[in-house]
Length: 405
Image 1 (cartoon, rainbow, N blue to C red):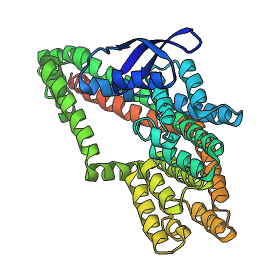
Image 2: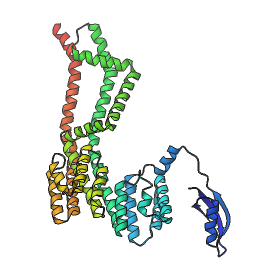
Image 3: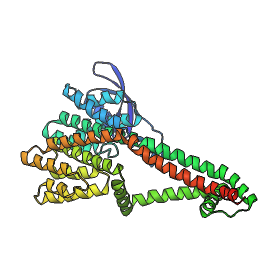
Image 4: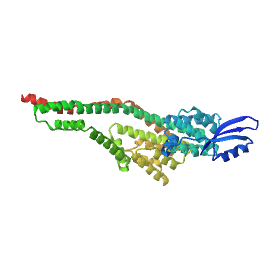
C-alpha cells in the first residue's frame, strides 16, 4: 500500500504535517475531511524501486532471536502496565536498532489499527514469527491472557536460544582444531612435500605405497589449483545437496544420533526442545493436537519428527501420548515418557513437561561445559594418527636408504 505525506489545517487552525498509508490520494483526502480538517497538500512518498526478491529481503529480512525475545517480553510488560497495543508497538519501533524490525513493527501497528489482531498481523511475517510464536499469541488472545502468552513465548524463545548458544560454543573448539589441521596439511602438501619429492627422485629409490599416495595428492594440488578448488566446491555442493534430500537428511540425522558423546547431547537436546515447546504451548491454551503439530515443526531431526507424527496419530485415536514416548526410548530417554505419564494421570501435563525440559536443559548445559575436556583426547588421537601417517610416509624412504648404505 502506498504511503503519503500530508499537510492539513486542523479545526482549531493549527497546521499539521504527517505521513500515512492509504489506497490512494482520494481515499486519504476523504478520511481527513471526515474529521472536519482541511487538506493543504498530499504527496505520495516515492520509494526506490528494487527487484522483488530484494524487496522481500528488506521487509522480511533476518531478525535476530534477541530482538524477537525482547519484543515478546517488552510487549507483554507494556500491555500489563496499561499501554494500548498500538502505542506499545510504536514505542518499540522507535527503540529498535534493526531497520528490518522497525518496518515489521510499524506494519504490525498499522494492521492492528485497521482492526486485525496481533496474531493475524504476525501471520504476514512467517520468516520472522514462527508458527509456535503465532499460535501462542493467538491462544492468549482467545483466552484473554495475551500478556501471559507473550511472556511465555519470550521465555520459551530465550531458553531455546540459550540452549543453542551453549551447543554452538561447545563445538567451536573442536571445529577450530580440525580447520587448523586441514590448513596445515594443505600447506605441507603444497610447499613441503614437493621438496622431499625432488630429493627422492635424485636418490632414485623405490617408494612405498603410502609415500606415492601422498606425493600424488601433493603433485595434483600443486599443479592443478583450479581443479583442486573445483573438486572441493563440488564435494561441498554434493554434501549440501544430499543433506537437503529426504533420504540424505535421514542418513545424516541417523549418524548424528549415533556419534559417541555427541549423540547423547543430541538426544537430550531434542528431549529438552520437545518438552519445552509442548509445555509452553499447552500452558498458553493451545489445543493438544495443534501443540504436537507445532512442536513437530520446531524439531529439526527427522527421527524425532516421526515420533511426534506417531504421537499425533495416537492422540487422535484417543490413546495417551506417554505410550508413544515410552516405546521410543532409543530416542527419548525413558524418564521423558514416565514423567509425561505422571502428568497425564495427575492432570498436570504442562507442569511435568516443563520440569523435564528444565532437567535436560541443565544436563545439556553441564555436558557442553565438559565437551572440550571430553573431546580433547579424541582430537589428540586423530591428530596423532594423521601426523604419524604423514611422518612414516615421508621418512620411511630415507630410513630405508640409510639402512641400505
